[in-house]
Length: 358
Image (cartoon, rainbow, N blue to C red; front, top):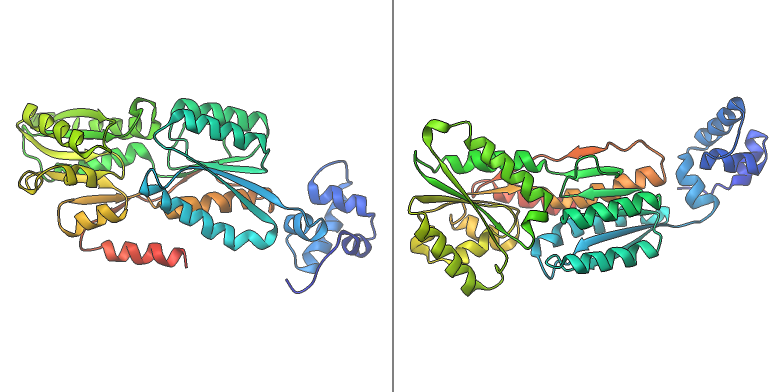
């Protein structure tokens, strides 16, 4: 910006009072249509977007955007949307945007509740969070809606939630896609495992949707008699317990030839089993986290589905910025593409991800 515009400057040019300009800027109170139009035209002549002027130049106010995200220390995946959030904050900070990050243990619903309550007490101007835990997230959405805090969700879609926007993958379609990819390695009569390495999988909407999509894909081919087994395992951090669990799963399903890991933890399956076993399994997982990338390059993972988490975080903040400052209509559902990543194209996606955060 080359100059500072004050409410007084706009009022003098439009030949109205500063109170009238204030009402136009904040869309409150009664202003005659012809007067409002004159004020808007003056602001356009001055070359500034009216809501950015109102919030930053006229009042020097700040806009506090809170984020409530899983702590990357408990799950490496969450470093990626946080990277996108930080990049977006840097790009809009000069408008008076202040970021107030809050983190919780992704394996602890009670910690989520505590952190959500503490965050709400600060009464932020906007909220961005990932509603992984269905029950607790619905309660947070109800609370933020009652407090009139515009909220953007990422990663996990909750149907008809009281949010400003959802940004992320279509979890149902990602399950369908995972089924299609795993299908390449299966023969008639094979067994495919849908494996949730997570805590409280029954309460995670994105996992529920992925399972539905996965099952309904294979239901299209009844003549092939593909058997689907679904397993939830919460002690995935304990390699010894995970190894025993997987060994029992393989022993109970002699024709198990494929595993769909429904989140970013496919690497844990491979790390827990000897190579003599994993080399005979087709494995599909999610996300370009470093340990998954290592196994993809070594052909231990056949396909990774990239959910564009960096872009999710970035667009989440930009959506709140557009709503709060620019008063733009924000698209309620913003589905991002599901990228199929294999050894041959992984470098392209890594370069694109790096370019986004430069």
